[in-house]
Amino acid sequence: MQNLPRLSFLGCGSMNEAILGGILAGGFPADRITATVRRADRAAELRQRHGITVLAGSEDGGANRTAAAEADIVIVGVKPVGVRAMLTEVAGSLAPGAVVVSVAAAVPLELMEAALPAGTQVIRTMPNTPAKVGRGVTALAPGSSATPESVEVVRSLLSSTGRVVEVPENQLDAVGSVSGSGPAYAFYLAEAMAKAGVELGLDPELAAVLAAETVAGAGAMLAEPGADAAALRKAVTSPNGTTEAAIRVFNEQDLPGTIAAGMAAAADRSAAITAELTAAS
Ligand SMILES: NC(=O)C1=CN([C@@H]2O[C@H](COP(=O)(O)OP(=O)(O)OC[C@H]3O[C@@H](n4cnc5c(N)ncnc54)[C@H](O)[C@@H]3O)[C@@H](O)[C@H]2O)C=CC1
Ligand SMILES: O=C(O)[C@@H]1CCC=N1
Image 1 (cartoon, rainbow, N blue to C red):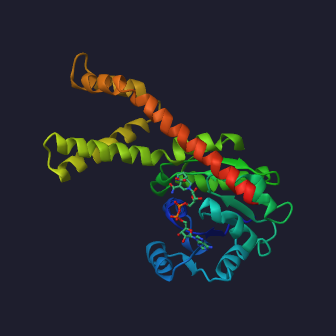
Image 2 (image 1 turned 60 degrees about the horizontal axis):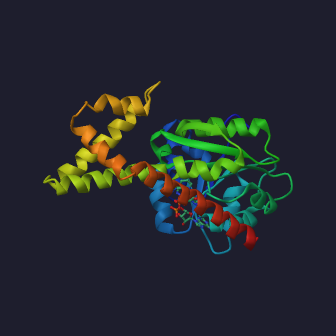
Image 3 (image 1 turned 180 degrees about the vertical axis):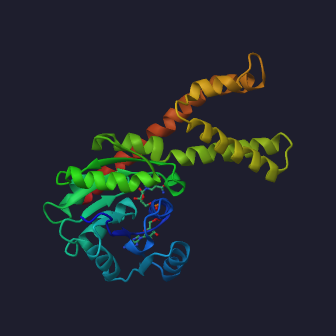
């Protein structure tokens, strides 16, 4: 592979566009990137926003095959149910030595490798959308043919979107329920805080600004080197003060247990999707 690989994003919705945005913001040249999408209006939007080449999908899969053929790294960003069909579509078009990276939840390496020519290098990842602002975290698990050199190239590419960690594939359901889905939990908290602020008498716009800035500011503090969530929380919580009153209610109503139950449901859903996809393959 050359110093700077050519990238093709096959399917470019929320997640792949976030990665694309993070990589471009990190200085990767737009003229080495192609994306495919289904609709012409979405293609125009991506071209205008990022200055990359975008091929609008045709029913016969020609756009995906063309994009795959010219790439050193192919990043598959369609919904889990569409991954096998996408890989089957491009299997005969991949360049020799190309690396296939999947961002799809719940789609096993084994299933992806079976849809591709023997020996294809596949890397399964679980990224998250803060990649867009360089604050993502991506867990990756290399497939059986991925070389350490290719893993390093992908790791280095994704490091411009945030942190990259390597995990055994069997931990990816748990990773997805923490960091893959996690941004949604933080946004949910901001929504709930804004709504509660309105119930306490604040104007809706003001409540939304206060909640969003607070979640964002707390996130920025957590991102500082050596930050510890419990210590930061304690620094806000005066003995017998207002914060303590709120946290007492959260604990009495077992908010930690509710969060754990929700995250277990996310991991269980991932395992169930894997079972459905495996049964259908
Ligand atoms: N959204 C997120 O925060 C995260 C998503 N993921 C994974 O990323 C994958 C994509 O999820 P989203 O981006 O949320 O979905 P999305 O629906 O926003 O994006 C999928 C895109 O693929 C396009 N597409 C579908 N079939 C195509 C085809 N044959 N040719 C060209 N384009 C095609 C769709 O038009 C759409 O734009 C999923 O597998 C999901 O599990 C993983 C981590 C986080
Ligand atoms: O909700 C989902 O299924 C995807 C995977 C992780 C985040 N979004």
